[in-house]
Length: 506
Image (cartoon, rainbow, N blue to C red; front, side):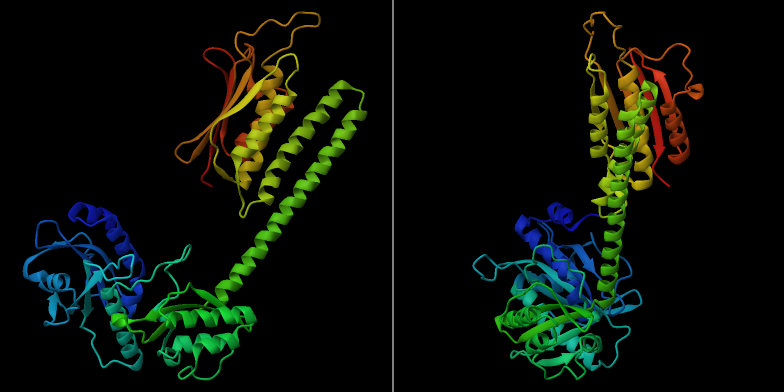
C-alpha cells in the first residue's frame, strides 16, 4: 500500500510543506470522523487532469463505515468528483446533492476544502479536499449526544476549511488519546460547560465531582479538583488557553487516587472564538499498572545490582585465597575462577542499569576482551578485538554466552602464542599476535567466531575428549544452556578458530 507522501509525489504537484500539512490532517482527523459519524477521504487533484486521487482514509469508530473496501490509491474523475471540484475551486464546504449508493449502502457526500495557512496567519490556497461520506443505512432520530457531536464536527470542518485545524502538534505528543468516545465536554465562549457526554461525566466523578457538569466553569473546576495546587492551576490555564484560540498540550489531572487525561481544543469557525472542546479519558487503571511496572522494574534492577555485588565479593575472596596459595597450579585455578565470576558479574551489572531483561552485549564483550588481553603473556603481547555486533540479547542467553566467550578468549591468548623457552631470544613475529571475536545474525541465529593467528591445534587434538576445564565448560554451556553448537578447528592459513552457533528464538 502506497503512503500519502508516495501518492502525492506520484500524482500531484504539491510542495513538501503542503504534504506535511496533509500528514498533520491525517494524523488528527480521527476526531472529526468520530464526531461526524462518517468516513473521511483525503482527495488531491491529479496533475494535468480533472481527476482526484485518494491519498488517505479514516473510518469512524462511532458509526458503520460507508466503504467496505479501502479507497486509498483510487483515482476518480468526471461527474463522480463534481462535489470535490466545487469545494476545491470555490474554497467552500459543499453539502448539496442527493444521497448516492455504494452497492447496497446509501451515503451522503460532503466536501471540505483543506487550506494551509501562511506563516503570517493568512489563509492560503486550497491544497486538498476532505470528503465526508456518511453511511445512511442506520439513520435514526439523533440524541442529544449525537446532536452535540455533529455540531462540534461542523465547527471543526469549518476550521479545517479555514486552515486552523488541526492545531500544531506539540513535541513528543501522540494523537491516540483521548478520543471522542472516551469523554467529550463542550464549552461556550465564557468557559461554561454546555454539554458533557456520559463518559466525561463519569471521568469527573472519579476525580470527586458528583454534580452535573453542565453550567460549570471548567477551568475553575479543574483548579479545585486537582490534588496538587500547581497542577490545578496548570490544568485551569490550559482550558483558558483553548478559549483564547490556542491549542495547549494534553494534561493529566490527579485527584482522590484517580487520573484523567484532558485535551483542550479551541472552536473558532470562520475565525470567531465560540468556545472550546475538551476531550477527557479516565487513565486511572493505566497509571496504576504503569506504577506497578515501574516498581517491578526497579526491584528487578536492584536484585541484579545485589547479585553483581555478591559476585564481586566472591571474586575478591577467591583472589585473596589465590595470593595465599603456594602451589602454582592451585593459584592458577583460583585465578581462572576469579575471571569467570567477574565475567558473570558484568552481565548483572549491565542488567542493573537496563529497563528490561536484555543487554547490549557488545560492551560486555569489549570489556571481557580487554581483560583477556591483560592475561596474555608479557613476552608475547596479544591484541584482542571485536568485529560485527552481537546486538541486544536476553539475559538467559547473555549470562551463559559471556562465560563461553570469556573461556574461548582466555584459551586463545594463553595457548595460541607460546612463550620462548627460558634463555631464548624472542623471535620477531611474522605478524602481530591477534585474537578476533566476530559476530553476526543469520536466520534467527547468532554466529560467533573466536579466531587467532597462532600456532593452531595439535594434530591429535580432540575437543570432545579434552581434559581442560575451560573447554568442558564451553561444551556444556554451548550445547546445554545455549542449545547451540560449538566447533574448534584449524584455520586455512594459520591459527585456530572456534565457531559457535546459538539459536535466538526460544
